Amino acid sequence: MTGLGYGPITQIAWVTADIEASERLLGGFGAGTWTRLPDTEFGPDMCRYRGEPADFTAHISLSYLADMQLELIRPVRGTGIYTEFLERSGPGLHHICFEPEDFDAAVAEAGARGLPVVQDGNVGGTMRFAYVDGAAAGVPYLELAEIGAPMREFYEYVKTRAHGRPDQSERTATR
Image 1 (cartoon, rainbow, N blue to C red):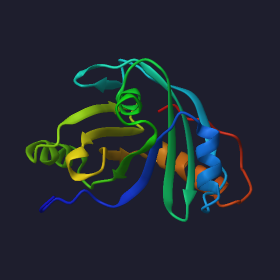
Image 2 (tube, rainbow, N blue to C red):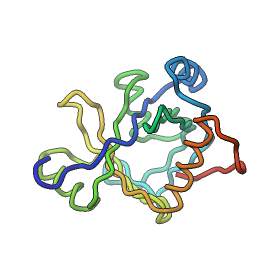
Image 3 (tube, rainbow, N blue to C red):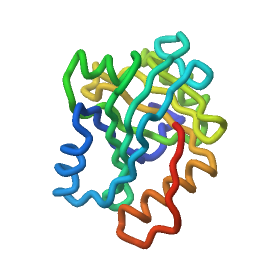
Image 4 (cartoon, helix red, strand yellow):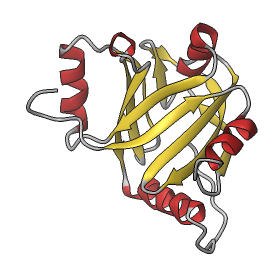
């Protein structure tokens, strides 16, 4: 992207049919303790898939390898970008996530460059995200994200757990 920049890559994500197997595999390469978010709802009030209100559920597991967040996603119910990916490609690398300084401008520029938004949402003001189609360039999807303070705090908790520092308290998040 010229001018704006998408910002740093902060996450690598896989869609899988077996979260436990993926956790074990990535753990063998240095990923820390995983934080699981079972039955994460993506409802029509917070998410759109191909421009229409979405309604699906996924199991999500998060960890870190150094400062890079790792995300595992297993679709459970409904249709969305994750079920579409599994049906088309099988399990594998799904997206990398960028955090641009200006989320709206980055989404607009991606569209102007021919990268359509496939799925987008707003998680109660804690996070906005947009997945754009990057398959022509070798990455199935690129996620653009704007992370608010409450979600950033949760991610710090996940990182602390992943790096083996003592838990402060158990937390869950709805994405």
